[in-house]
Image 1: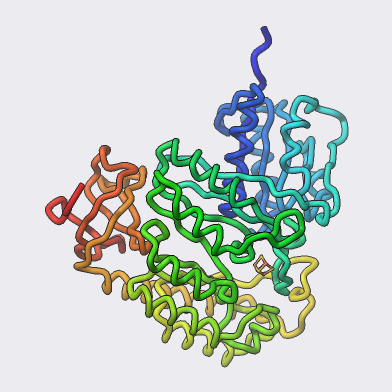
Image 2: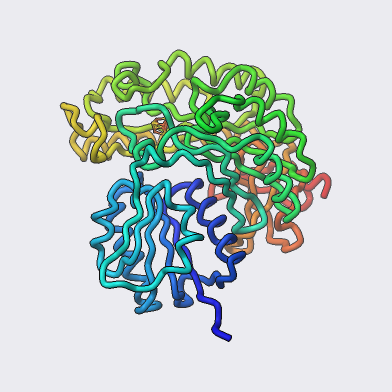
Length: 440
Ligand code: SF4
């Protein structure tokens, strides 16, 4: 009998890509293929690409080269956002055999059997408007937490963003299917689910029609037995309703942690970005959260160096963030993306200035994080320990996203433990000692 063909995957990009690769991996195994590690030399390589990372083209080329190093005759298939945006360019990368766009990503399963090397690469990439189907996905890389995809695509048109071009219109899983998957995940022993999507606050559009709201999903998932924690990954401020905040505040399972993109603290820049809120709304959302959950962790995405961002606009962002009771920042240095309105705007900010601004906000982020951790010292919290071990210490996160370190104990991996938060250690995590453990 002929041995089953082997498939190896590589993922570039976001949580959504990771959840999709993970699901594709499980599905190819169900089809009778052997899923192996990248370095093991596979018959077929599937590379899931991203359009948001800098140098997407360069990174893609590098992964193809690496794959062929391990298996010179391998069949190489490129899928994902970058494959959707630039299918022809990708097909020209030496060694690429197939390119699958957004609507075709999950057709991989049907196409696999026919993957045989040909003299010219095959390109399966329809217009992104064809990407209307919702494909469920969740990651299952380790047992600690999993990313469950509940929504895909985006109907917004932020002027800097390529995601709607790469992933298409907003569409969602049904509540029933999301709940079923959460139950399936609970069976595997996973304790925490992170809800993932492109614009999850817009959850609820199924087959082109709005059927539910995000709050409905949250309320149903809250009842799934076996999952100890749900985390909402990132939600647009204008879609983070009072009802969602109030529900999370009283929930035993949804943790007090939000990640809310701000992008700029200047209303002038927010308008140019075509974001759907002004800074006042953002501040109001943060205040509402803090009123109900004083120790809630709040992460912020912010872009520096958007075209037209003058020194005073940047300082407005800086001071706005400095005053807000948020816990940490994810800082992005603006870079031009082809086919976006922002790329054609005047008054580009010099790269050196973008980098200086980025550095200032990263420093501010460290200050914010430290202050947030300090406010948590002495409190009791529940930690979910992860598998990573460094220098005899293991790490985990509290409900509100304080990073905790504790002496390594293999029995604690993927366990929840009620602890008292001690001091901030030299690596910037909060140390606990076994003596401060309250309940195991
Ligand atoms: S909300 Fe804006 S930034 Fe986010 S995916 Fe949609 S278009 Fe892109």
